[in-house]
Length: 167
Ligand code: IDP
Ligand code: MG
Image 1 (cartoon, rainbow, N blue to C red):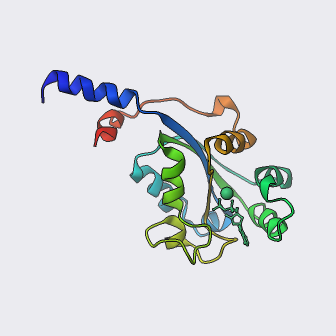
Image 2: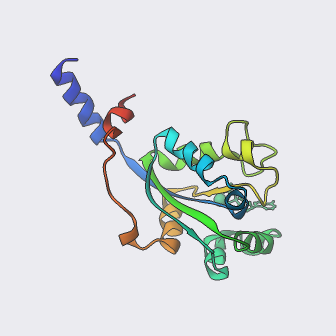
C-alpha cells in the first residue's frame, strides 16, 4: 500500500473519538463461571480493557449505582441481587463504546434479547440478566467513579490496535 495512504488511514484512526464505558458481570455470571466467556465477547469486538476487578458490592454502592431506579417496584430486589455475591467490574474503551456495548449486552429483559447478545445467550430473567452496561457517557463516568479511582484506570496501546480499528 502507498505510504501516503497508510499515513492518511493512520491519522483517521488517531482522530477516532474514543468513549469509555462501565460494565459489570452480575453475581449469576460470576458463580456460573462465565467471566471468561462474557469478557471474550468484549475482547472479540475489539474493545480495550482499561480496568477490572472482582468485588463484593456494598449496599451503599448498589443504591448509588441504581439511584435512578430508587422507588421502582424492582429496586430492593435489584439491590439485594447485585450485593448477594461478587460481581466483576470492568472499564472498556473504544469508538462508540457505549452503544457498541449496549448492543453486545442486548435488551434488558432476556426474553426480548436477541440470540447472539450476552443476555440473549446467557440469561433467562430480568433480575438475573447477566451483565450491566452504562447507557450514556455521563452515566459511564458517574458509574465507574463509584468503583474505580482514577489511578486504577490504565492507559496503554495494544500492538495491533491501530491496524485492527482500520478494518
Ligand atoms: P439496563 O440494565 O438494560 O440498563 P435498566 O432499565 O437500567 O436496564 O434497569 C436496571 C436493572 O434493573 C436491569 O438490568 C434489571 O436487572 C433490573 N430491572 C429493570 N426493570 C426491571 C423490572 O421490570 N423487573 C425486575 N427487574 C428489572
Ligand atoms: Mg440502565
